[in-house]
Image 1: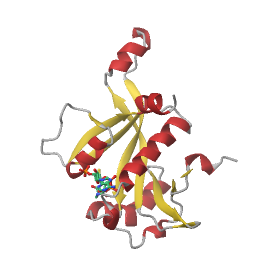
Image 2: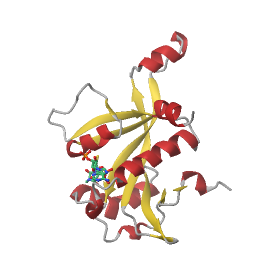
Image 3: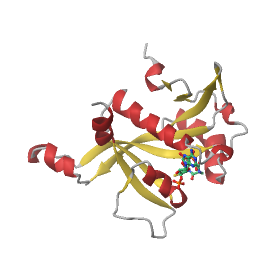
Image 4: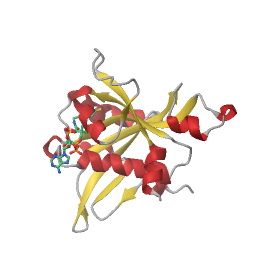
Length: 189
Ligand SMILES: CC(C)(COP(=O)(O)OP(=O)(O)OC[C@H]1O[C@@H](n2cnc3c(N)ncnc32)[C@H](O)[C@@H]1OP(=O)(O)O)[C@@H](O)C(=O)NCCC(=O)NCCS
């Protein structure tokens, strides 16, 4: 029997775990129509078709768990033709890889009434911890195609631009990555 607990994070203040019953998001809004539509109508079929797994972030207080105050939907990803200084240093030429395994933040939203209070940052930090400690497969990077309005959020959470300073352009989103190895070195010393 495979334990689902590997993908659940819980501390004194919060729980982050995969969603089984999506009706828990009735009444949830992050203020973005596309993301609200996704969590209400598309997240469950995406999960059933093995395209994304959606996690609910809830607060704990006095032994009670709140309704979800944030969600994140994840899928597998790969970073291709990508050079890091660590890649050059750590891998001998015959062992350099053209692709690195990654996890992609496909959708992320905090309840509109609770934005700017550190929820999104804590959720992303918990994800980083999960992906350096409880992986079933190798996963070196976290990636996201970020809304331009959320770029400062990802910058503050130490994500880097795939293309240098790719903030402009006409695309709605900008690709960013986070190096989980650096986070592991800093947190598991
Ligand atoms: C982007 C989003 C997920 C961030 O979640 P959040 O819970 O608001 O994130 P945080 O509170 O950790 O950080 C958000 C901002 O609040 C600030 N902040 C963090 N803790 C704070 C605190 N205790 N007091 C005041 N401000 C704080 C951060 O500096 C950050 O500022 P920035 O926007 O200039 O980077 C959320 O704003 C959201 O759902 N937006 C709408 C949907 C969206 O854009 N999703 C992203 C798709 S890529």
